[in-house]
Amino acid sequence: MPLHLSSISVLLFAVASCSTAIAEDYQMSTVPVDDPRWGRILALVNEQTANRAAAAAESGDEKTIEIVQFIEGTSYLAMMRTPQQLAGSVARAMGTTFVPAGEWSTVRLDLPPGSSRLADGEKMLKSVEDTGQLFEYTTALGANATVKVFRLAGTSADLQQLTKDQFLERLKAGKTWTVTVPQVTSRCSFCRGAKFVSGAPCPQCKGVGGEFVERIVNITW
Image 1 (cartoon, one colour):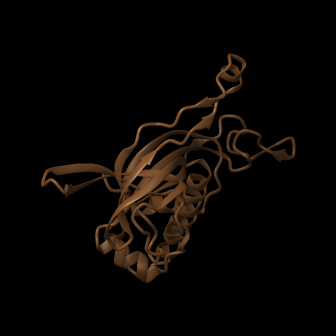
Image 2 (tube, helix red, strand yellow; image 1 turned 180 degrees about the vertical axis):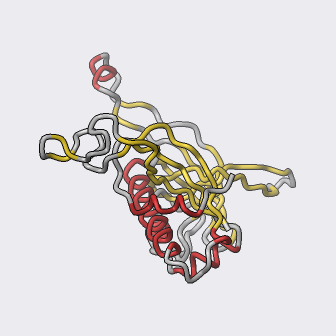
């Protein structure tokens, strides 16, 4: 069920305590292109996309990668595995110093646009993330194979700020963005909407006066 246009006003509220998330769709095709909501929504998309990319770069799954074959653009077939790692303190106390490297698996690795061409056999240690996509190809023996698609975690493409024209173009091409927004659902049960308690901002609603529900909104065309 599409999110009502009036609900987008939640983008202007500060976040207080939130309850269980509710996923909804918000169709930008219903909003006139000169409406100021475009600017507010684009700012939210840019901010949350950049935050997720930065977090992914810090917590990405680090892998040893060996390039096998160039596919096209900045995509490669590659072998990937979890590198040898120092064992935890309990394991080290029992005489195990390192956790062995994982098994090699074939993947497609997508590098950021504009990346330099890599040679077959080139190795690297990078944080990567699963895109959730699959890639089909034909092996040298003529067999069909399907592998997972990975990309570098927190790539620079995710950190770039979209312009309104770029945002509109990608929406029309079928791209969607998922953002989280808070919405007031009821009067704060602690201050009963007064926002302040004994002259200080309410400790429960942070001086907003209401309880919030966290909405997961899919921004679509």
